[in-house]
Image (cartoon, rainbow, N blue to C red):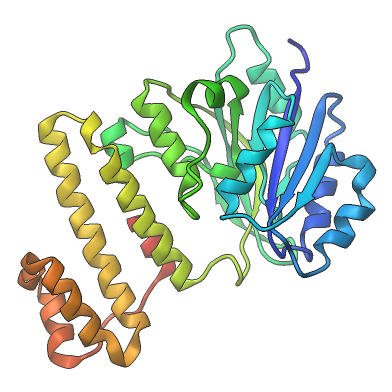
Length: 305
């Protein structure tokens, strides 16, 4: 299959400042068999104007309220005809030649069903901020504990059959639906293939990276990890439970900092639910002094997630 059909699905909500560049990055691929679907959650900015402007270049678009990006994405496969599915957020960009690279790997008869590429990190005005390469998890246990594996979601391409065999994204998850789907695939015995090429530019901007959002995502990751603990042998399961408890403790301290003067009362509530946390000196310090003595570092929290 020289040029497998690729469906690019873009979830969007109030990303009107960036979405034109996202759409153009798909058009500029020059790939002969691509369809681009935009599923908007009811934006109130210039997004709809952009979608109307590029209506002829899009396979289709909708704009209506939804439960979040996973819910939005899930509506597109009913219309998408691609052999390969990609999710490209409305503030990210496909890098030149990305779809040809994907087709070269996944279009082979023995090609992978699940492909991960690297990303280029860019700022609000497309300025270069760094690079991130994909790395494969050593095991499901390592991936659940966040000890191994970097799978950039925007640079992930799935064989459409995976969604038919394993279901769609969990619409109840707002920030970890891609991580949960990866865990689901790995628990079913699927393994991704990583390629060295950078396929997507991942945009970092203030609306996307916030302390509250980082904490919310981290807590969702922990809940997902616990969901898949049953797929591990007992010894690994016990190690995962300890890992999740430690991560939850870190996020509880982060949330207490976000609550400012209410930090102490918040942590007392957490202590009632997790009395063994009282052994942690960090918690006792906050309960004595009323404020955490550390500052939230969203990069460190992302690593902990």
